[in-house]
Image 1 (cartoon, one colour):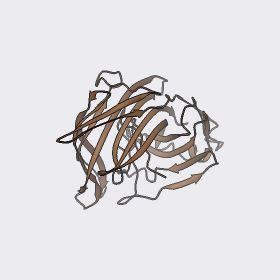
Image 2 (cartoon, one colour; image 1 turned 45 degrees about the vertical axis):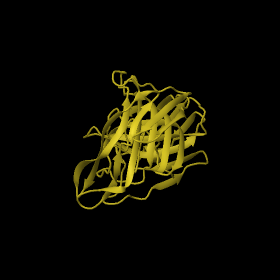
Image 3 (cartoon, one colour; image 1 turned 135 degrees about the vertical axis):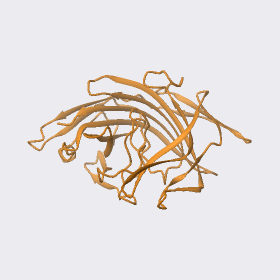
Image 4 (cartoon, helix red, strand yellow; image 1 turned 90 degrees about the vertical axis):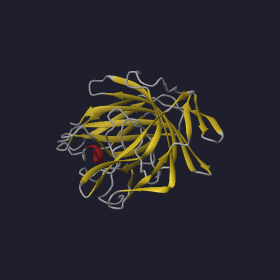
Amino acid sequence: MKNLLTYLFIVSVGLFLFGCDKPAPTELIDDTDLAEYEILGKDINDEFYSNGFDTTGITQDLQELPNLIAISGIKATDIHGNTDKFSFAQSIFFDRTKEILSPGGRLLGFKSVIPGIVSFDNIVSRVVPFHIRYRENGVLRDTTLGNKYVLFSGRRGNMDNFRYRHNSHMNFHINVFFGEQVSFDIPTPIEITGDVEILGSRNQDNLRALLHWNRGNTHDITIVIGARLRDRDLIMPLYRVKTRDDGSLIIPPRFINQIPYQHFDRIVFTFIRRFENTINTNSGDLRVSSQSIHSIIVNLP
């Protein structure tokens, strides 16, 4: 299953989970012919990248991530039912001849570079450091792969003057240093709005989640299920579900019941409706991703 591109902020916590020194194999479970489940969380005590699961929508393996252009319209609903809306855009370009290694010689990714001036809908992106976090020999470390381009509206629209427009087109433009200009439009999907209802009880071993969302203009959607650690403000990705964009899904007890309440106190359901395309270029693959995202936090019974 191809890597999930998703999104990046609100709590900027979360991670793509691996074994201690190398990626663990992904376990796939076929639930029905309508949904495909992928287990993400292998070890709640180990984390590889801190930016793998957050509220901008990207769970990612940085060793394999291609050059990326991603725009997101994001909603986040808290435990009290309050919803914030914000917009996010980022573009990352890698020089794959320059590896970034940990002190122990572990490949973390490739150096990210700034090839020109990038804008979305005629708004020039900011250049910011591309920070990652990783664990080596039991120690949590951080480093910088280079720089990347970012636009972020802020949770109340008080940062960059950038707004994601659903069910439309948004323009990407790069003025390459000492080179050509490249410009194209990126289609955006219909806005997704989800709803979560927890059914059953843990004591009866039938705890499950009933999910609803508005139908859209894509064949399928992705739902990422994460949980918040009790002792840390950290959301860990547990499952990823690919299902038809038909408006409803029941997450069965064998997934919800297995989330240990001794470690986690809340569940985060992230609904993602995405348009995505990978383009082959002379500089390597370029992934263009446009997504509508709605994250909903509920208590874990």
